[in-house]
Length: 472
Image (tube, rainbow, N blue to C red; front, side, top):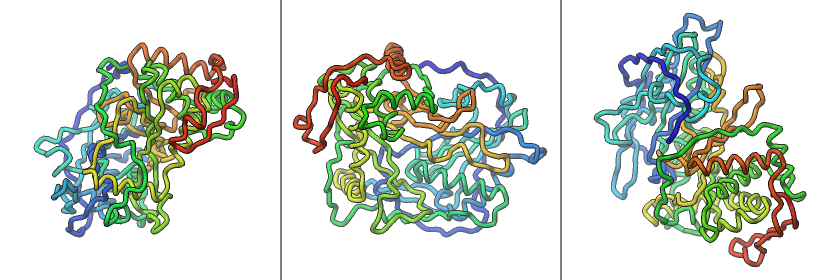
């Protein structure tokens, strides 16, 4: 897999240490939810934030400030200082034993201005130097620290915060809640604005389980690997680009959300670029925050577990690529709208009944929109970061190519927008760029009348209306 041009610099690490809660915490075992401990989440997710020096913080060591704040935050977030154990039925529990999180401080012979704009965006080319992750003697995600943190001081007075959190403990919203708490404590707060609440039992499978919805996201289909020869590019969509994409929509879809429109364009363009056989099934999978879906009872505001669902919609490559873009937009809306309270409860029941299967990745494009999580806003006293978000630019475990994050970002002109990292084989990337540029310069070729009809699409019970000759 090709990478960006690496920025070479020396990093001197101190000996990693375990940071324990600043005050005594309760010893107990806490069960994870049936959403938390599904095998697809058995991984550590890396993130990173870049900070400039601040005149009001001259002479203050960011590693010391953040280390002390983490120790304080681990008092209310005490399960994060524990260790995962496995019990019967492949069920994970947290032993809340206050063993601590792994913390490393380091110094780098580089300044923030030496990073190019591209090197501040995922995938971060020097992440191995910026995040210590050699957990020798630990058994994978079991019996090992649940959070890893490295603070690297820069010669310009700024610093870099890199971290990994075990996904079974928290999703993106949960991670943001923890880092916001660390920031509040680092800035001297005596009380948190939002206190963490466990309550994983609220998304436990029902007794007895009641699978009331279809869950094709867990279809067991053999993986078709992309191979190692992948290239990476990040595509920026600011106000001008979003306006150009919107012009490609038929009149009745002009009010579609930016997420719906952008996802439809990228999924369709990616499918065209990969030249998947017309009769092959292609899937779109969304990582969706479902916290607001729970009504009876609602999830509390401080819940920091995995409040997610990963629904899919399925099409043939032919229907997706030969229809106008309106077809793809309706498919995105379809998969979003299927997620309600009953659906997320049915997911937990399905996982338990079927021994927690993994989701399928073959011909699947997975999207996780973290642009609203404000991962570029954590303030430890130096102000918000210059850039922040995932350290990798892809979804789907350790293998790139199967999906992407949507990140809040700014371009070189300071314009705000959404950054979309994409991994594809070299020739497919050329075709993908051509498709995207066609939308942006309004040169996408005309497509014939739709080749699907509501009758032939009745499996999902959705009526699709398209105009003849609409630009894709």
